[in-house]
Length: 320
Ligand code: SF4
Ligand code: SF4
Ligand SMILES: [Zn+2]
Image 1 (spheres, helix red, strand yellow):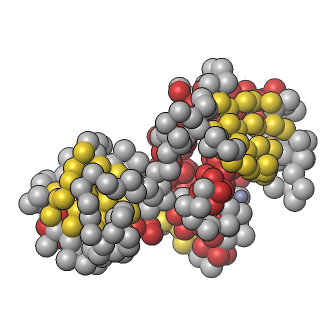
Image 2 (cartoon, rainbow, N blue to C red; image 1 turned 90 degrees about the vertical axis):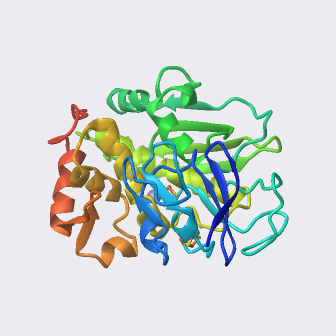
């Protein structure tokens, strides 16, 4: 039977019979991917969820954890795309370690150093239509991490990140719509990456803003995974579309749905764009969307995606 060892703000440390689970509510984006992983059914997603015994819930009151039912087994940890769940503790180390109150720093979200340089996003895309879509996502000014739509995405992953992203146009080596390159981590902890959009290779001719956004989010997640690798937080190959397909389609589609007011099916189709080489796409004929577990066929998904790609759906298409 689990008990809360410590709770500070939305961060809770739960001790179960098998180990310790640390939940970082500020990082949780309420995607629900952890829910089916819990063998105890201790996690449930519900807006305004009813309290069942001692429990912990995040700020949106959608992620609910029935603390009494949590054994601290850690099965849920790997499902979380934003590292909001961690098992074990420091300095105990690993599942079942001894937790020293106040000592844990293992909230999953990788924070930058407290004196980190300010973050910035630079829009260097020459094609006016694509540049306008990037600007709409980025917000005004280079310090847009404080305000723009991209900031919402990035802050889902890391609230305290010192980051410098340059977005530019050009051609990508493999003809993909986007490429993330030049990832580096400086001595003072600042992460830099360049996102190249294939504006000269025709990837965005006629595209809707929603499609351009989906490509940029995809690249931001590549950048995030490479950041985790550079900081030693994981060993995921940032070019690994398997990881994007398995863990990030839901967060991407939720964001696209909420930002552009499109349907779950449309947002899910957009989130799958660029992942056609992932086993999760190749080996599936039916794709889940929405909270009720509806499914659509691969051809429906491809059709929805294509309509955003060429501007039949979505905000004003790019015509060159
Ligand atoms: S640690 Fe185990 S029991 Fe607790 S919520 Fe995660 S999966 Fe469920
Ligand atoms: S998987 Fe992570 S982000 Fe998604 S609901 Fe669970 S804790 Fe929140
Ligand atoms: Zn990719």
